[in-house]
Image 1 (cartoon, rainbow, N blue to C red):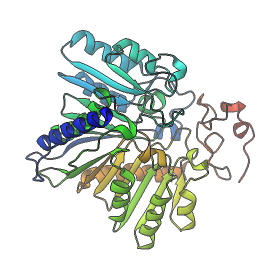
Image 2 (image 1 turned 45 degrees about the vertical axis):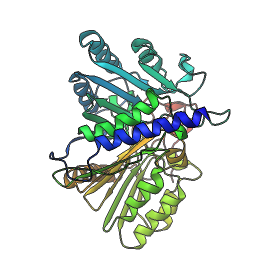
Image 3 (image 1 turned 30 degrees about the vertical axis):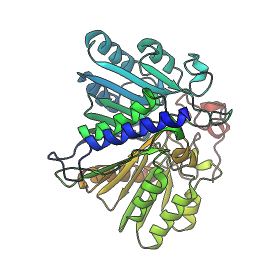
Length: 422
């Protein structure tokens, strides 16, 4: 009874705060202000970069660093973890020392152990321990969500909220293979909007202040779109409480009239696949780029799309196709942290954003998709399969990574030592 009363009180608080923040549907006086950052992995493909992937600070990392440097009031973050990103630790340390008035708070994922047990083995990204120790347990909350006795859900957001007015979001993890070296294909969106920031801040506060994760979180009562003066409309969905597969992804696919481009790391959800096939059958031009490693999953749905006659390509680079992006009709974009999997929409803490009626953002995202689509053909090794780690996967046999998670790295991997023709 006490638990129900506590959750009801939080629900009412969120309902009224959302009502104060979001307009009644009228357009904002401001246009939609954004920046889209795409991973520049193409130097890895053409050979101008090669060899071991190391801890560097690429353009995506520089963009986030600049945003953090401009913080004057608060930095709130919900991230999966941190791996070898020394530049980020340096920036946060500078904020602590030089801007003591700036509030720093964070939520990270912890895979194993008891909450707050700072052992590297408890975190998939072991340098997360350094982050927590540097900022302090009072500033960084580590989430261990367990359903029953097994930890099956993760805090999978990649999210920063700066000064309650700017949001950094997308598919990019704070790892040296993602935001650092840009070895993986990712997209990050920076939005400057107090209304959008407040929606994300409400979600963050549930996790940080109220210690609510997974299915314990309270859905927002009002989910009206945030509308802007230039006609852009933004809708935001959180996993699992907003049921984003059914309320966001499937309606988004159903809205497609001419084109649907999808870049997806993990795609195992059968219901979403059926909607993509239906779009193809009604004449929508559909394309999918998927990750070679995740494509080996038993329930990977690229096979279903291929059988339906949809053009499908596996990435051919050592890194991951890590995007969670879909583009409809050259004017609507869906992105965020959620893979199209059961755990993505049912279990994990995730965010999905839909930006509608913005041809500029859709155009930039489509241009990046087209670059990847073309590069897969341009740099494909004839006669060699596209494997996560092997001769057909560019630089994967010299990057120092276990790309297919078989415990063998580079030349020690059979697919690297003895490439086999298709």
